[in-house]
Image 1 (cartoon, helix red, strand yellow):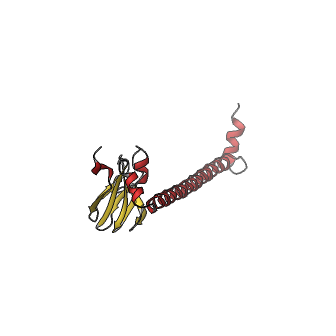
Image 2 (cartoon, one colour):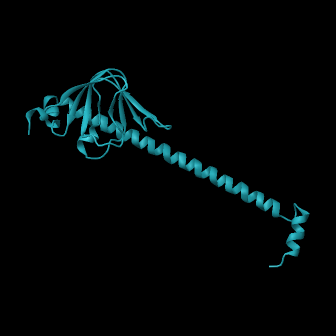
Image 3 (cartoon, helix red, strand yellow):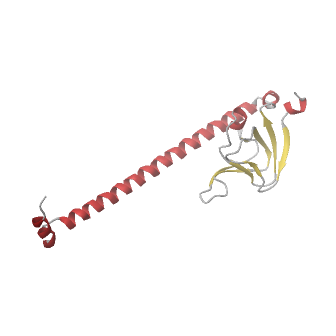
Length: 166
């Protein structure tokens, strides 16, 4: 393997440049050396969600180095940003040059897990609320049907009930 491929490399992005795209396989993670990066779910869509704005020292995209799965978010340069790009091939060198990088990766992974757990809780709450609203609507409709078919409330309903033989 080429020795150059084993070393992390510096890369510059300008404001609004896309660094990672949700749903695409990247194989790279990044450590911010200067500037800031905005991280989104559903970037550019109607229901876009800003996860956060990461600054100097923060790692992102680390799951890409440890799996061949698509990115779970989109990362966009918030302003001019200098990053260190790390691939699976350069990960060992990245860790060997500064043990603090391991802690940064682990902290970001823990943060990502916490954010995902919180989002799952919000989704469960939202579904529960929608189910409660749907049940309330069903109960209201059932109540109205019972009200309109109750012979005590409507004399015509009484005629229908007495003349209908089952």
